[in-house]
Image (cartoon, rainbow, N blue to C red):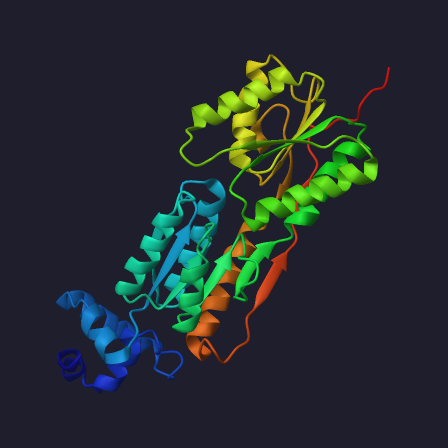
Length: 337
């Protein structure tokens, strides 16, 4: 910084503000910023992150730990988080837990050793101690997609109960009476709430509850497909099916075809979470779409606010966003004979 300051006739403080993305905040002109950045590029200057952490206690890095970065939901949310983080001078480390609690614990430990400034996490079952430890150590973090019941934290979630209820109620209003829910067995809050929403609508309509729980740990997609396909084969009277996640919905489409059924004709279908495939299929699939941009932008906004003002200064922020029910061709009105 001294070399750059001397060459440009500036103070090292000015150069430091530019490097640390505080130029606008400190009233440094755009022309000065351009000159500093041009010289940094020309000289090949690279900040020493280890030295920066020792000097400031900040690494300008964030950890994003999600269930599956390859899933369209988490991938799109992650993209938004990364974009906003970069604009605010932070780099993001991405990682996936695959719903494995030991992997989640290990990732949090590794990221803490790497001195990340904060976390955005989709929690696994059994992560309570690590979350409580982050709170105790006053490391800023935000939970997304799901919460851990009984632990007060910053979070951005969806009204999963309402989404589950509305999708089921829509099927009932269209005349379907034998509605199955296909969900997973991980027991996380968002899945439980979707199931409770389904259950309430079923109870109000006084029709039979039908639930298939598909294991996700130590099971391949092929195993899950076989389970769903067999369920449909053994329960030929089902007239509508509700998939609790988009990846189950995609497997469900294949299972329905394996049973030589036609969506929208032989069986109605809805899914929680939208997906490009659901929009492009024939027929298109009715969904409860999650506001991906809002989830990502609100999560990173909360984390940046805590990083700037102090983790303990601001009380926990819990935002619950509404899903959008998008009615498509997979749920036509039942034609009574």
